[in-house]
Length: 97
Image 1 (spheres, helix red, strand yellow):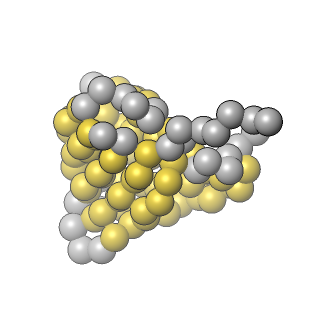
Image 2: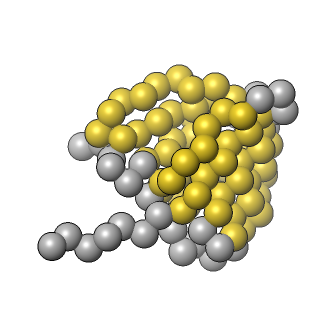
């Protein structure tokens, strides 16, 4: 019996529309100081992000990639909020290898 993966709730919003929301096992963000990974149970964090690619991996392994512009992320109690000026889905690659 496989161990159940811990997940986090993710909500990605742009200034004028919701971009994506759901459950994830990991998120990689373009932080202002360089790429940053967020996993479930990460310590609380609030940081600025820059233009770049944000990657979300769902519990089933599906991977979503989004082009985002300047904004910020807030993570606490397994809830990640990503607020950006602009963002859109650029790639859905199905199950991650």
